[in-house]
Image (tube, rainbow, N blue to C red):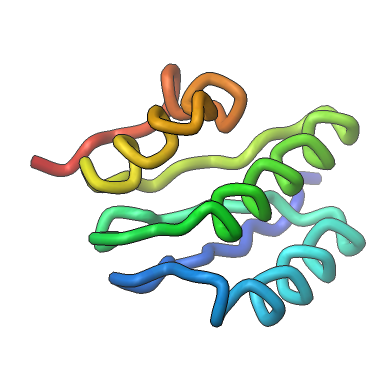
Length: 100
């Protein structure tokens, strides 16, 4: 039996204002053992708080034997992750599709 998959669609501007709600959502998904898919294809700006939250989610999933599944990532999202040195740890290097 495969785990259910939940998809998180990040907003055009993903910032600290959404961090608390995203934390609660991702925490509930982690507790339920679902696969987490993130679509960052529409992101034009993302701040460190959201990237840190996604990194913590990725680490938790790694401990459970999983990882974030990326549906797509904008160039802005990839650039922000790279600027902080998080591209590889977030799993973007091997699995993200960059929308042109």
